[in-house]
Length: 296
Image 1 (tube, rainbow, N blue to C red):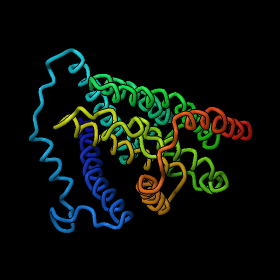
Image 2 (cartoon, one colour; image 1 turned 135 degrees about the vertical axis):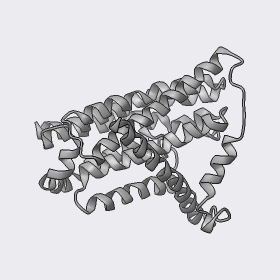
Image 3 (cartoon, one colour; image 1 turned 120 degrees about the vertical axis):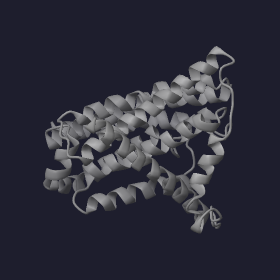
């Protein structure tokens, strides 16, 4: 019962953060494009995300007219379940729960998101949504190999796969990570792939779609997909802060990483898919293998 309360509280906290994160993203993108962004609903537009939520919730669409449409809801529920588990891991960290294998559990949950993307894209009954979900899922094979290399590097440096021990007792190792700053950049690249963010948002299917693999979704299901994507962004930023910063630098690193996600979307173009695959398999894997050889 206590852990259920922790999970619910952490999920609510992260979802409130997601609401303001979406607002901050729209504000930052607006000022980058010499406009104000949302500024009508509430003071300085602070209630814009909640107004958008109410507008989407009251919409209605029937999904039960064919089997593919029903199966598409499985992907939505799976992504929401993954978000709950992410929130649960975050809540365990906040209450000081310690497990030497929590990072491995996190990596296992990360690999499930590809099935959700496939289900949602196929269930959209839209060929461009299907193309986007296929490319995103196949790209997951590339960056998850890099994630596994990062896990091995972190385990070799720290000696365990725990979140809480890393945050409390790793000041010396974090100073060592200052000399291994390329690992931080590699982790950010993998996080951009995991969260379908520019320049690796291949679920958008280049210029064919507006909302990516969930183009045909609306009302509550669109809210679940959209909010879960931003929730995973926060989780990835939080994970990078744990392993690469300590003390008061933890909060600075978290803020800096969140801003990087906003800045990348406003400045970087989407790259070609073949360039992405070639880079990960021809260069990034080689670099990470070299780091593994140095550590082990």
